[in-house]
Image (cartoon, rainbow, N blue to C red; front, top):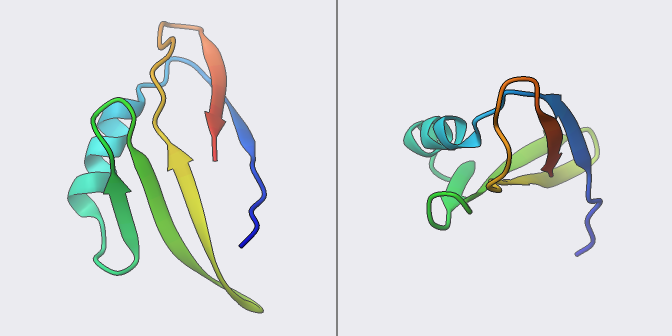
Length: 75
């Protein structure tokens, strides 16, 4: 299967850890999953699209989270 990698810009501060903690706690079985160790987790979710299904995946990556810092989220 093929994918389309995206880099999503964001404005800091962004602390991925608490977001991934929430996604892991609230994951819907069979629809969402969070795998990997803290600091390097992978969140995946299935999607219902107009002409089929898809999967989106976002990786937690350690990085700068200070005030005013921005960066990229790989999805």
